[in-house]
Length: 444
Image (tube, rainbow, N blue to C red):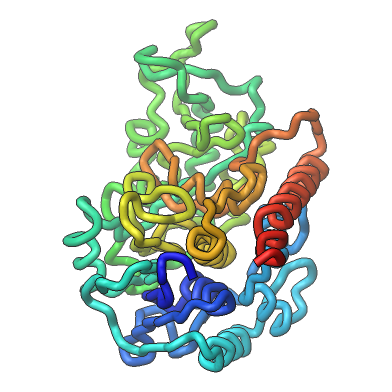
């Protein structure tokens, strides 16, 4: 084994840590896996099992016209133990991969326990171990003591203790006849896409925002909600002027060609460099998903909006990954990896993906003596690039098709376009994997 590395330490036995532990153990590494449960529980978990799902039993759609379907397909192609176990413990859910949560966690725990190369240590880690390589996968509910240690020893700024997420929509779904590019007061480049509302439309939007069904926050989440990330609907409860003097402020956003003034303006900001996705600025929300679609589509420019990511607000502990992480979730200038939601990936599948990517980066480096570079057309690559390169104020994200490079051909039908993106991703991943992993393994 290159560099004489025989043991790898992982902190956290959630989805990311469990996936990483299995992949490394299967490649001959000894793994020390630390998980504080059941000795110390989190406010969300109910068992001491590894890989416990806490919010839902769904791993989302398996259709290749969805981002979750593509990401699962890529993980399955690379031998994800969690995807395999999920398929074995699935329950009927149409085109979605839903599981028996207890059965999934119990089966994963047994697989890891029985692996001859894995040692499970049930204790809370409060200090950074000296062991290297090290994978930190402590999740969105990282213990307070370990979070303080991270801030003291590894990161120079505070961790984020809240997750205020605004929706992201596909650029192709925007009605450009009802919006215009402009910066406020024409200062700087016209980086924002402005969606104007007249008084009648704003009042409809405002009233529906107040009446929409919301997701109630849990007790342990309420303490994480600060003034700076207040949900849009809570701002609205303070009066409509809170919106028109706040996130929907029209001042300085007269139409650049006609000079028209508006009662309110919702701004959109590019979510990525290529402009395939846009963020609804200041629209963090706890509205239920069907309500988000209904209410935001009242805005004329968004009447056909295709949501790539829905808004949410809940407690989350994550680092400012673009500041600290390089390729494949590895820390800059240190042999430490972060994986799972502590990196800012959002969702079950994304957490699995980050754990698998970190593990294979180590496998490629230490066993194959080469760099892991998934093709940029793949979901696995796009997700880690988002974490590494995001330029705006960093917020967690699921994988969505807006993170992938555009197709060379122009396809109008949304479903077909996504299926083509998935087809390209899986072909490129297969080619890369055969050339750089399977052929190298067979020659060893």
